[in-house]
Length: 376
Ligand code: B12
Ligand code: SF4
Ligand code: SF4
Image (tube, rainbow, N blue to C red; front, side):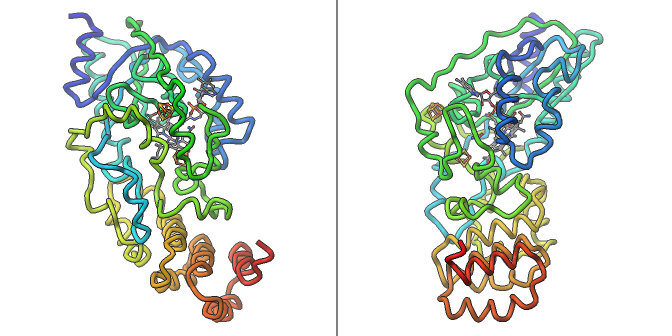
């Protein structure tokens, strides 16, 4: 058995669904397209994307000794329609990847084991493992290794697992035999582009992160811009719309990975309960999941926006206490939500009580926009 075959077999034993090899040459065009993306400001406030651009553009810019890259994929598909939750406006929609243990932890441990196996087999050599933990362009590398192709929604699509793959990488100074790249199988389809609630694709294969609900609810540190709030709907952490509509998902399989088993208790949590969580309750509920890394303040911001979108005046009571919250993000979002749920008279009464005590400029602005709607 060749080293490459042994590696693939060990990867499968460790729970990786896909494993393929490419050289450490930079994928053609990737660096140039990254530079164009950054020049357009599409990264928003993810400053780390710009700060690391040079190293991110090419594996050898990150680690000059790299000769080969082993790309790994793990299926995180689930039974049922991930978008069904969007028609339950009193519930919080958490994207599929986040309703389980944090994949960074699960994949990193396995990457280390696989890298250890490689070193043991060859009696030496250096290895480095990455799962979204360093400036590596994982998707273009996965495409040249043959794991799948970058679809028009920009994520990697696999003929075997559809859009539901999480990625990891091992860099090595060994020269391994590379696999063949995968070709684009999107054809004339544009389902993902049309499904996007915020029109975040300026063109096929290009995403403006500043408009993406995943960015707005997970990465963005400030208030969610007004123009996107309604489109966010009840999505409180990430978004699966463009991934879910991909026709290649018909080949997808529910993950059999016990460590990535879905937490059913997170699938349709009442927004009212989420708004009432204190910091300890938030940490306990989301322990070990990617949601915990969001932090409680941004979580309260997202929950308030979702309640504002619920069109259920009866939920206003859950958001009202957030007007006195310690976080301006939560207070500002609560103002917006209550303006949508309460009759003008009731809202004005709240404004009369809360506004004189409000010392944060951004929250005062939210009040001003809602009490004088012409200023919107
Ligand atoms: C930054 C980031 C984000 C940002 C920006 C996303 C983006 N598309 O760039 C935000 C916060 C929005 C985000 C969201 C999500 N993310 Co994210 N994210 C990343 C991260 C850290 C870097 C991605 C990156 O380099 N972006 C920069 C742009 C320039 O790169 P790119 O998307 O590859 O851009 C290519 C295309 O634009 C293409 N291109 C441009 N023009 C043209 C023209 C033509 C003709 C062609 C063919 C191509 C083309 O070339 C570029 C270079 O290859 C990676 C992890 C990593 N280290 O790679 C995870 C990663 C991409 N994310 C992941 C996931 C799961 C998600 C979400 C699904 C989470 C969710 N459910 O909410 C969403 C999906 C949103 C989407 N449609 O992309 C997975 C994707 C797995 C997969 N199957 O691809 C990754 C790989 C993490 C992981 N280790 O598994 N993410
Ligand atoms: S994740 Fe949602 S908001 Fe982001 S591009 Fe896809 S459909 Fe649009
Ligand atoms: S939905 Fe269609 S266009 Fe989008 S990634 Fe899937 S096949 Fe490609």
